[in-house]
Image (tube, rainbow, N blue to C red; front, side):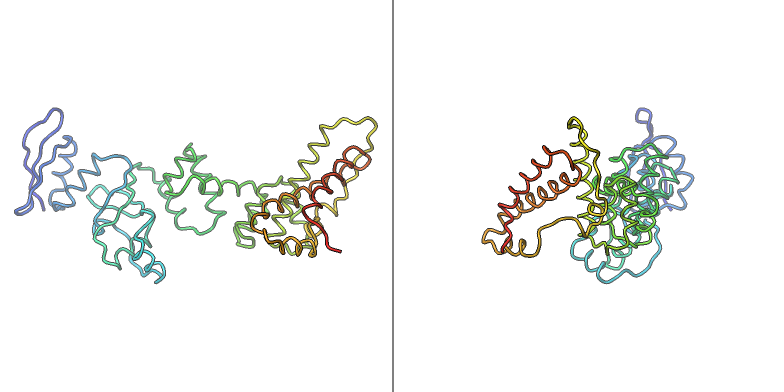
Length: 343
């Protein structure tokens, strides 16, 4: 319990001395803040009285060093590996808390971090204090930090942006993650429902999902309709790269005007099956990797392989167009200089 003494006005504010036993502090507060202090004086000590003043008059959102004793959170044990990490590196991502209006706080996100601090004997923890008073937003933030599912994260981020009209940068600050993380998660929403559900059920990993999200919906369906392939991560990356090459080649063809050019007949089996996509054979790769300058040539080799794939795709799409086929053959000859085949 604290004793309050009004020490007079300072402009439109009130100077008040707050005493507990032999200790006291003097603060200048708004008249309405003084009224709240009077109402709760029998429940406050000096520390909670000072926190209550901050809650009533402080900034909307801020990073603060808070006594662990003032934060309400459920207690439970945490994994030893996580505990060791906090012990060695500290709490890298501040927990998010909400002021309760009585000098104490309730955790929104970061229960595990606060429990690690408790078990390690921390007296204080840096926390992000949220005072926006929006229960829906706080619930979404809490759910975001609870989930370990990229698909659900993407949906929660989209909900914050749509329902609260927030920018990506604002969502990043609210969730205490990087803007790049927000962008990567939102890209997952480009997945067709069937693939998005696979991600949600952890039937595909995030790397595969991100690659497929770069494709058009009809191209994503080709991934689902191709059971012959085992679809390793490398297969998916190759498949996506091939579809991008195919799209670029189609665009290039659409911009070339050749009189009486026969209709393009696309060999879809040859293009769409990732296992059939042309790449250097084992002997070529052996020649490449035996080079003394492997590290220096790695980028060049990758470019040459890409040129080879583009050229072969153009040849498939440009049947009957002699000029395009001839240029594609030139590209293949250039690539062969850097990717020789041993006989």
